[in-house]
Image (cartoon, rainbow, N blue to C red; front, side):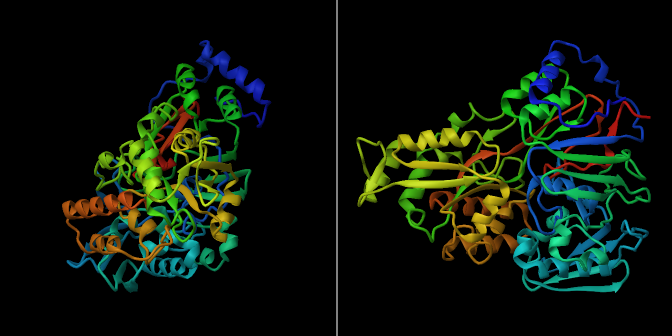
Length: 532
């Protein structure tokens, strides 16, 4: 059984516990795996504040890992094959032109407040996502061009688009298009962010305190898991307690002392020690867009293609492997390797310091021999980059760019501070990844007629991205996304750096924890071997 002590101890004391574990004194926290048992509360530590737990509004991984437990989706996606399979929809038909999707819903599904889930729920949730506008950046993109949602009966929903929308079926497997009760949709966006959400999922959100914690309890009437689930009926766990613990040493020590069961943000330097201590380390590469530098091309410096291209050429991505997790990889495209429709474009991302220098010379940026930084008209080639993630490889990127005469100034901010800077339009370059198990994430982020992360005018890239929504042929879509990715890289609209992998460590008692297709977790099948 777990020792359910309260957080926190001092960092030094917790680190000492972990070191003792590393010496072989871990037998008290191990248990033989067998048949799943019910009971117990899974205690998870995140390094980042979820901020908002409404998955229809946010795309941040920590928040969506909470949302996934509360909401279900029309479909699910097999993480091994990419196949779309039944969940709340037992079956569906897609028109030949990919404009109309007819879903046949399971009967007997209810929200956690007891109200039924019906075709009307599909209609009002999709309308609510549209009403959220800019607050639902990803969801609005998935539903762009939505013409209507017809409900011929309680268990049939017909979703129709103005234009072909080949990406939509995969989008229905995401928690971003998950479902909330009518009472939830009556709440303000702020109330929903603050935890007033009721879904159909296996766990109900009992409480949420931003920057501190969240508590989920089992929905005992749950009986409609995904067709990929490993059991039927309610979840095994009684509940889930989530705590925000920014300090890695505290998370390590808490895991070693039995105060938490799962650390969701293992640092590269801690992986070997944790595994040697008997704590399994789990990971799965995040599909979708890799960590990228994203120039705002309406701004000085970022508007210059020679500078953008030189930055990409000055980065030695193979060198980055030395400072990232063994579970991560340097980027070989705008897309990560676990994304359907991925193509290896590493030839377009080769380290080319001579090419970078030639581009900067051409643009009039001359090297100042005293400072080592290039200048033009007395102004240094200096770029400020705000970021909130735990990404030590940025410091190596900073060194590599300095060798090319580019001054990259790193500013670590909180997520709230970074978001405020984004919304205020203060960033010259942005930096993030975005997870989705479909290459359509490129269209979501870069389309100049939609999110337009680069703040640029439409070009040939938009024509290619439009074609990806028309064709359903897998090979044709892959070829189109490859063309778009090549143009994004060659134009310097995207500067890929590293593929993200979530690296988690667990107590040996944690069983059945696995990543779904978007590399987030579905804890419905998870159980604790020390319970029962």
